[in-house]
Length: 203
Image 1 (tube, rainbow, N blue to C red):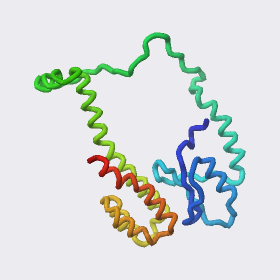
Image 2: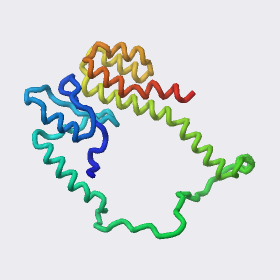
Image 3: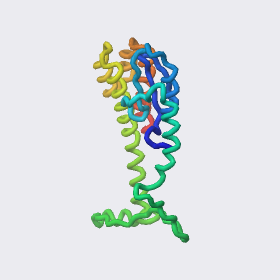
Image 4: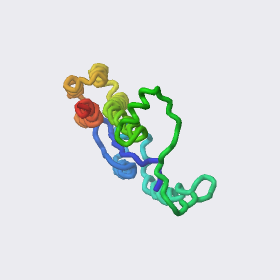
């Protein structure tokens, strides 16, 4: 499988939503477009950023070749296959490294269930989970902003909507983009949605 285009994409013909799905789905939708259609913008849903649109009309043959040739991607650049794992006990991914703490920290860790190592792993996992909500919100805001900037930067209320997006003001944001073309506003709301939900899930 070719790994260049493995995300999900959304294509717009002007302000009209044309297609959503894999890169091959976008290519098929573009093949049926009339040459007189408005300019096409294709966005990576993972980042919100515009990407190159598939070529027309030879997209089908090109993607077919990409699919066949992509099978070679599993072979390393040096032409040698990765060594097979040796028999025996599987590695658990545990890495031993030095940790420097004060005596009171070691005393507290040693008193925890499972000992110091288990306590440290729990603390790290808890900290990671606590940060995930903030990370999800930040990524959602960045995705939505990149999409808005590319397709609606000239629209009335764009700057105010951007400020509302970054401030987490959902009602104001949705009010400001309500006057935009229906498909554009709907996709902006879709991209921004995890940004509104993340703070609530952290409670």
